[in-house]
Image 1 (tube, one colour):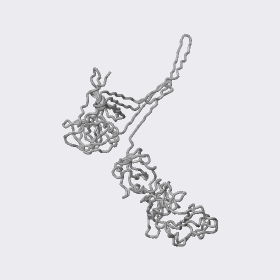
Image 2: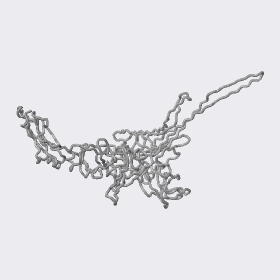
Image 3: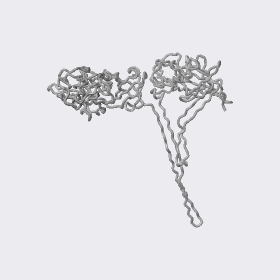
Length: 574
């Protein structure tokens, strides 16, 4: 049985910021354990007496090191920082294989757990657990590693190699990290340009896209197998498992005897049952879409207000099936945590950027693009014909006010109309359409907002004549404080409350209302508002004549005394 050689357990920090990637000695250990397991999927069949039939699934490996000591240049907190930073390491140790000599086990891994111990005047030590990523390697000889040469990269400065220029790709995101890197192939092989190739050790951390021929120099040696796409070389995994069972059934014998001759006939029937289970996991193909943070209509038409078309990698195969997406366009054009739309093939969806990254998360389901409207004018007559393309109607309604000249007036106004949209979003560049409480207007018609203000859910927005919202702002609550003196009033001073509302004052107000304030006979405030004409109208309230009364209208959002004859007066005794 092989034993682990304690003096040769080295942990290397993999630095992919340099080209080629480098391995930096980070820590060493006096003892180490290595384990590798393969998961089994358990099946059963009545033809096997209901015994389990295991089939092979995924494999994994782990390493645990006791008394791991950080090397010179690294402090006691580096292990904690590298775990938080998700740093990838290379671990390598030797095994004494007896008469076969030493074998060397190595692979890429992440820190999955650690504990720290130490005493006065002694070196800091750790107990650290590592979880492997990808396959591990067992080599008959160690791979020499220095601070300038990666074990995952073979480097040469002389023939026999052919040299080329390539782009360096990160396999985790399939994006270009560095352009125009020198690579090499053996003289006997001529690569196909504009293809992807792996480094000689088969690393899945980075790959190279070979572009053109170059001259001799320091280069990374690549394998001779070409791949068409980065996703193909880095991410596609296909696993197939087939299970076959066979059982024998039915055996019969027939015998006949005549005189001294006997003959026997035996027949046998065998049935075979084969079950096949195939599991295939593939990376979703990218899709293209137009992106805009102005409105859904802008993304759908990919107009001058959009950012244009980008390639997106989604959690699904298209916009509707991708709740998360990544793209360089998100990273470079959308502000941190900003909202935007992407559209393709008449379908649009609303997303929010995840912080400062290149990814985003869907904020609503996908929906059909807003209906385009075209107008055709015939010069031989004065008739203008408008043709509306038939598409699915908008499905989200918003109860709001008729247009107001300011946000304050919109916030104070009572809702009376319904607007419809394809997204359940109030504001944020959403496009709105005419409708009623029963549904959108058919044919679908854009709401011409005339740049006026509308409020819903505590947010006021402006809507232009194309139905697109802008200038979102929160509603503020205006409170009029009335200082009153509580007085016990005799019945003779408790009167019916009568009001008069004139058309002149209604026309002068922002929202068509006249507002009244008073107090009842016990001093409790009364607040009333009317948008219809009234003359000495009995409100049904009794008010104390010893308390102050107010009449006002809103002009530019500010309470203002009316000048058109609206009043509040006392009636008969209550």
